[in-house]
Length: 266
Ligand SMILES: Cc1cc2nc3c(=O)[nH]c(=O)nc-3n(C[C@H](O)[C@H](O)[C@H](O)COP(=O)(O)O)c2cc1C
Image 1 (cartoon, rainbow, N blue to C red):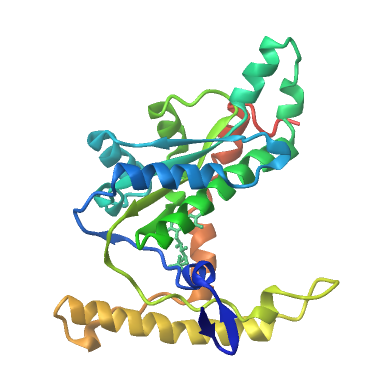
Image 2 (cartoon, rainbow, N blue to C red; image 1 turned 120 degrees about the vertical axis):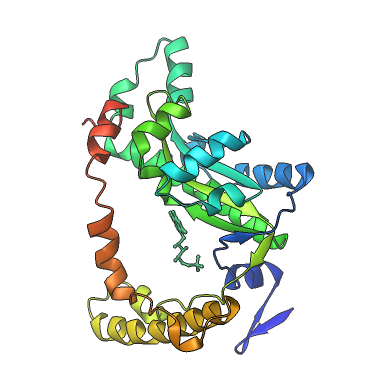
């Protein structure tokens, strides 16, 4: 047992509280037995109506991995990780089974709720894999960048209708870990019985507090690179990041792509 503040925690909670995305890996490969355990952990996740509406595609072809790293918003570190899994929302398998049973559910699959069901299933499986990997001392990073060129990536992976890549997850032995990133104060994200509309002050305070974290991280990175601490480029603030996310990556092609693949048509 560990102690977190005055609360008693356990090893699982410690793993969760120590989470940090890792983007630098050693050359050491994750063992096949470990990979199997990761995949079985992913499969153990809860699943809406037990549809198991997701697929995990591991990229083992190094050339394909490099192509996908470039297509995923040019993130070369992806290709340096031991393993790269792409988590897809997938209702294709279920549709095929229904076709064999001569039950036409295509129209139902085209609804928004089916899209949510499959996306949530893929996300829960992925988070299980991430937690399992971190419990083994491995490092992970989600790669939403796979949606940057979703048309080309879906073609490369030969995804059928009712399958789309939600994100990737890289896994490997960490060469470097950042300090865990402070989260929003609990009272900004948690409320009782009704929504809390009064979070703006907390948000600004958090924005400022996170600047200190980013400044510290930039100083450490500069030091590691042998530069003067003063040369560290200031990181964009958390609030600037919100705008950047939606202006730099509006991904306006998404609805058209999803519609073409059968999703969200009604
Ligand atoms: C769905 C999703 C997609 C993400 N995509 C990327 C990505 O493409 N590249 C990347 O470097 N980090 C990516 N991240 C990692 C986030 O930037 C990271 O989780 C966040 O900044 C919090 O930092 P932490 O995970 O170290 O606590 C993604 C995270 C999630 C949940």
